[in-house]
Length: 246
Image (cartoon, one colour):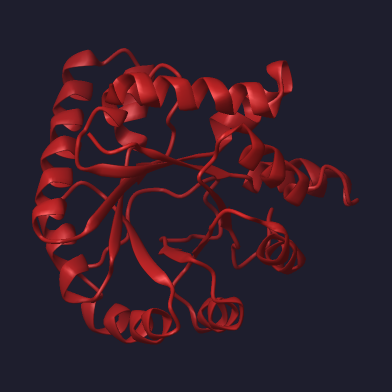
């Protein structure tokens, strides 16, 4: 089975920095530690309200990383212009609402096909691999193909929430949906990623889904780093993913 890539999201290093309005902790430093610990890529979400990652962070990450940058962003003209200026390895389009604490649910690709197809075309032409962050639904997977995405990232938040709530039967139903849609997306020619809310407790079953190529994990790892250090937290996640694949 193919080795599963790990993308580490460093947004919440910037959240801590912004709480004091200074320059520390530095997201680029965290990204480079993640590289050293075995991350295969770095994810950063440049939100419209700049609540954590800032434009200067994207400048620094683009120039300072040896591994690919996955730029998460809303499908807006401002963000498209930023992505076209930087041309990161990957662009992941996510739904975004100003009042949400974190990304809630997946992008409604099926309900916005014409606009998203026009939005994606120049990004793909510029060499960016465009990913769509979606729920595990056949309509969304199939729409992703039609609008020209190269990748879908399946939203694992519901699965993780059901696990945390102790709702094992519902969790298993959601897991089955994730596995089914990963297989469906792969069969349609999409590269399949997954992420949102994954922890040491929930990562192994998801990592075992054979069609998945990459997991993107952030908040849990940054939180765990407070207690054991970022490199150790990432190394354990990497080990658990590898064991699940083995």
